[in-house]
Length: 103
Image (tube, rainbow, N blue to C red; front, side):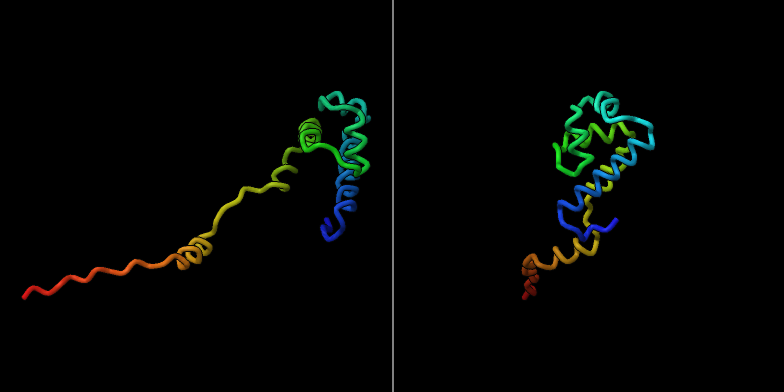
């Protein structure tokens, strides 16, 4: 998937992928809307790349049994050990207290 396009182009691409998936599952738009619990217009908007609510997209992906697409959109965020080391080096170091020699 080429993600260098404009937002509108990416919405159209996502919409066409959703339409292909719906057709692969032999569903018409109304049947998918009923299965997802969203309006027919929401399905039409998503497929045409005209936008829709995120909630509608999630419901549609659940109905199409493709919630794995959501993981691709929002992967788990983790901090690498190298990032932790870099972050730690920015913090000021405390001065060590030296033991006084006994006289």
